[in-house]
Image (spheres, one colour):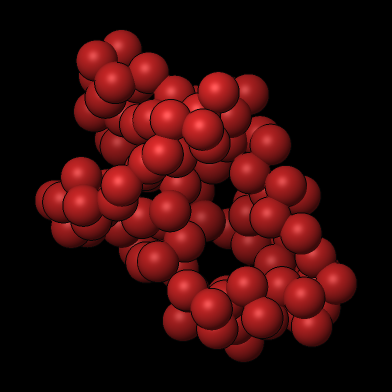
Length: 108
């Protein structure tokens, strides 16, 4: 996802701006409600690794949408719009998340 992170640098935004809420609420503040039960199941079985996996899979799915937005648009998108959009294919999201390798150093 070098293109996405390059774009974040260009618009002077860091990932912690939107990911901190992901960690505090395990995505409950962000995603459509129908995706939350399987995410909570993953969290119970895998712990914090699940949050990293889902987060990276989400950013991969949203990358093409986000690289066209400026800082204010990205902020608004994460704050309001994404929960109400039908962007997520649950099976693709969870399949992508299972392929993400998370190093224990990140989690600790």
